[in-house]
Image (cartoon, rainbow, N blue to C red; front, side):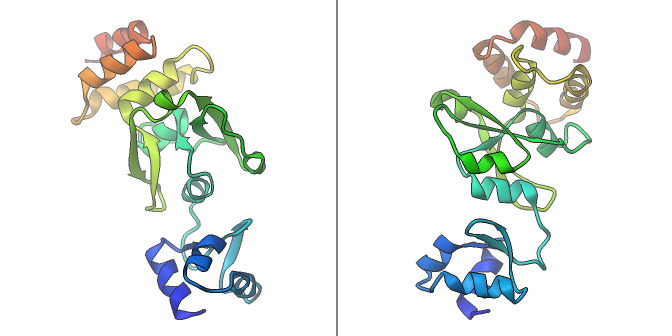
Length: 195
């Protein structure tokens, strides 16, 4: 492996793309050669990881589909509010976004108008210790209650109990989002019982 690629991979959480290699002024075919020799592993078209680094599906998906934000149950998982890994990741994209490549991944795609799609975004660490974009906890609680494609009742109950026990909760922000997403009544019902 060249010193430039090795340094880039170390600084980029074990991942490199053909675009990255071009920016380094190197021939991107070097990545294919490194993959053939077992030095790198190809995880998607133009995306390679160091096999010595823990493979992080959530990070790879975020890296590959950078406009997506982890949503609903996937966001709950990233915030440690539910204890099971979702069988399909949920990502929210801007309205009109379309990438046929995403169909080969276990991802449920949602789309929203841009001003809502970017509301309440923050970064958290995945279980593999990589930063990904996700909605904050208060936004996520509202998202899981929305009637169209609401989460199952056990997931909602577990998330609400987790939230009620958190020290760093922002009830004002929760109420603001509840009004915006028209879920104020169910939020009030849960919070009256739990707080």
